[in-house]
Image (cartoon, rainbow over all chains, first blue to last red):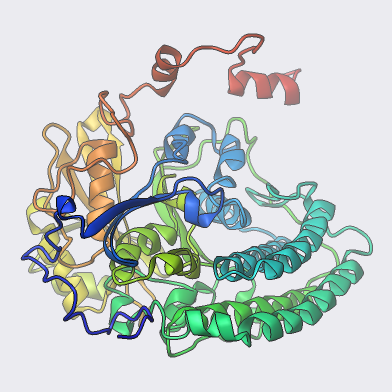
Length: 395
Length: 175
């Protein structure tokens, strides 16, 4: 029997499932081994834990456990004024905080009936694409590292660091930016920013060619990722799968195209898709999406207005009573649909904020299904290929 | 979006229609008809994607508002289907048979708000909290500040400020 993890694999040699779709596991038979995968590692694979039951090296049963990063963000926000929520929302997804800031700010603006200036829209789009690029660079190192290619992570984290330099220059912060604020953004591009950004982009493009050669053409990486962890097309809506995980299965879900926001309608791009939907395909979709971000940043910098207002007039943020109502603001982050459901009761404090992170569906119900029959050594690679951030699950 | 509601109005008592923006509409449906209505939207109107299920605690009205956000991937439109349920013995019908991820949302709502979804897989198992004995923490009457003061020891040398007053004093000392 092939050692490849493939959900279509013949299960006739494995134990029968009972009526609940589970296997009757008798640990005292010494046939099975109960093992905890995580929570020890600081990255994606260790922020949550998997309680797995093994038969030999293969996973027979799995239950996900989350809560190790729970800080009660949604509850904290109910006790803070809207402006005080900005240092909180960016911490929901550390590698790409800007999507949180954008969704929160745009939900507030929609409820308050505020239209942001044109320049602010371009700057917001620029920051969101920069965040996408930086986050993909970090992810690609994680995916390669999970399959034993530590050097790729060294390269791409260096590239990410060069993007953090641009973030620092533009916003003052490297990791958390709080650049997007209600009504617009905090500042204009610094002098010489475009030139330095172009140098970064050229270097990223050049290095990504090396990454493609060393990672995507590598026999070991291919052997371990092709035909592995396939997401069937009919699972997409059944499990609420979005973003590259859905696009790799040939379903072109991309909020930037489906419900265009900011200046995306003025940019020339297509949703990146694939057909085979295995780990290799998903990695390739993300690599091409990364290169598309490079192109989008170039388009934005070429087309954006050189000057203009960057912030609409808003009430005093310390006494701002957002009109009563509710809305859902969403954006396409690197993992799919990111959304903020905001309910205001007309007071100075949000009544309810609910964060919709793509990891919520990808890392719990979907992972628990996909991990069955997976080899123990491939679990980390599978988890990274779903690109999950546990803080989104337990906000 | 309005035409869908006009068409379904005869079959289901739909209230409080509001077109929030060009692709999002808010509606309220009775608890007893909600699952039937959502099933209809999914199976016959193309609302295949469930984005979120969440709750809002209206403590002063003694009600919970459940919000189901569903999206039509073809027309790109979304509905927030709101269902008001009693806060006492809060209970709602499960929709885990429609979407796999619904069971996770319902499990979290049981833990965080105390809203039960009988029949939903794993709904009684702890999701995020471990060994929790207080009232469900996302209810409005759960006092986070009081809980943390009773549970955790204050660190020596730390000063406390009321955030709103501190910011006001820093930013607008003359007001």
